[in-house]
Length: 213
Image (tube, rainbow, N blue to C red; front, side, top):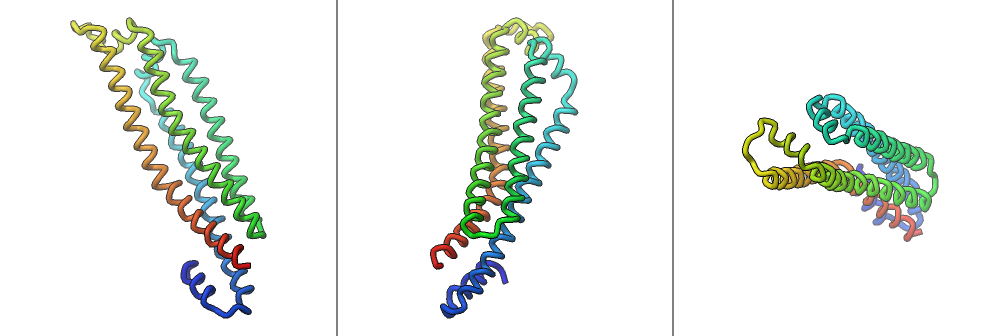
């Protein structure tokens, strides 16, 4: 019997049996919440591994372009800082999982669920915001070096106006940024969004228990 069916049976039973059912529904909500938070942590770890692997296989020619724009050190520092932030979030995810797993009180579990939701939302906002910031940063840094940008955009030295090349670069970067933004957003909606929806349902179930007590 799933949680929805259990709730219906519990709500329709006699008042004197509600205490026992109350505990059972709490245990089911607790178990599901713990499982959801564990998956949030697992997905976060897999995501970190995936992006780390991507960085290792980035073609060397792109690094040479960054060297021309004197961006290698900046990118390396920002990459390390990004990983530090991600690891901090993963530690928070793990702590959330532990705290939810050992919680034995309805109100405390509800508060833990709220904390999990906040942490995940901050994580999603950080990553999506980073895409926007990175796109703007790259545009500013590269457009600020028109000669290097012209060489990178037109290595064969074709007769193309610098303004045309710069405009093409800006438009292309914006389009790529938008595409990446929506790909990541769709991924987060399909993973974290789906898990948060289930977690929110558990929160409502616990709130119902708390109000009926």
